[in-house]
Length: 286
Ligand SMILES: C[S@@+](CC[C@H](N)C(=O)[O-])C[C@H]1O[C@@H](n2cnc3c(N)ncnc32)[C@H](O)[C@@H]1O
Image (tube, rainbow, N blue to C red):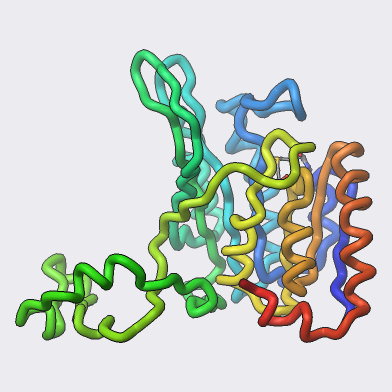
């Protein structure tokens, strides 16, 4: 099996038009934030952000498989002392386009350093918005289970009678919990907060993902030989990780220097794919 990694130079909107409909299993991306990194690669004014993004999200909706997922890393910036509302507006407009806003994960940047602002504290989290085409989508929850750890040691030591029965939710959600179910288990499902350091191996891009971020979503929403797309590729973190995990991937980048850099980085990984398949299969997904 050959894992295909397509690195494409160009404007995301134009390139997306060339990608077949219903062909991608996971889209994960961090588009340029409004105005924020103007010096590096041109920002979009916060007032124009929704207008700029909607034609792109229309194409993303077309290329995503009905069972696929779109993870959008975004965070509204502060303008004149107020949080901008373009992310909220974007969600509402994308819903009108036909997207389902199914979940929101929080990326807690656990190593962000302290700072002093007159009316706020250090911003140490970003949104990872999850959108889908359908209510039923592929999700491999067992792949991201975490050790039960210290919570179990303390919470499960002394169980009340109530803990041993199914405790129906007071808010009437229909979900209940029987805490004693966790006795003897080593793994539990994670929460929707991802505690990841911002640091990454790739220092050649000022806004690169830590590898653990695309890795987590690739594990959760895809299986080997599925296709992952990053329409704002940057330093290619998504593609490099996808390839390591035996997923096909497509990366689109408008700046030739980044495109070239990723092309060069991808090459040695492609060569190593001639080694036995098992090495890159499921067992490799830590
Ligand atoms: C926030 S960075 C992505 C960083 C990436 N997640 C990584 O790990 O390196 C956004 C990238 O989108 C690129 N970009 C901006 N506008 C674009 C467009 N219209 N089409 C394609 N790429 C674009 C920028 O050059 C930048 O490298």
